[in-house]
Image 1 (cartoon, one colour):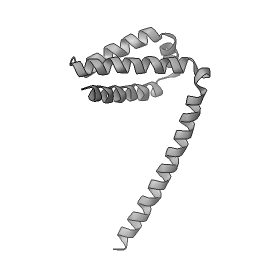
Image 2: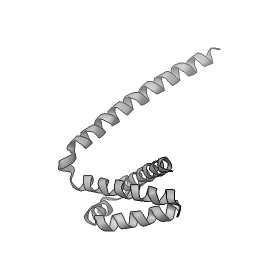
Image 3: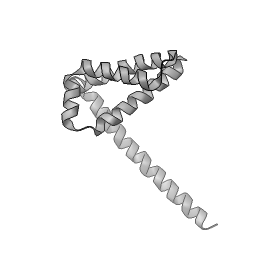
Image 4: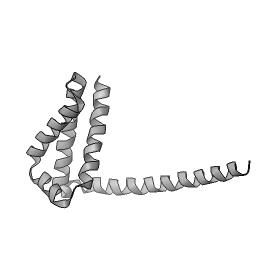
Length: 115
């Protein structure tokens, strides 16, 4: 039950991050300046979306903590510059991995064409 709740919380938080990244700057600024309201609305939305089971309630609580932490990080970027550096490094490594997988896929398809 706890494992399922943690998985739900992580997936829901990632969904919020993806939506947040697509928002206009004016809405992002509003969210960052009204963190308590954002926390309350996010928690209510999570509760409604996931349902009223005990697992969903635990997931909503964990996701609420994640959202609060991420809002704090986005509001205090100077304190967490290392996270932004880590993000850049991870993005670079994932691009390298994507290129490697693409190259292997092309080689595999070329080998299949000759059979």
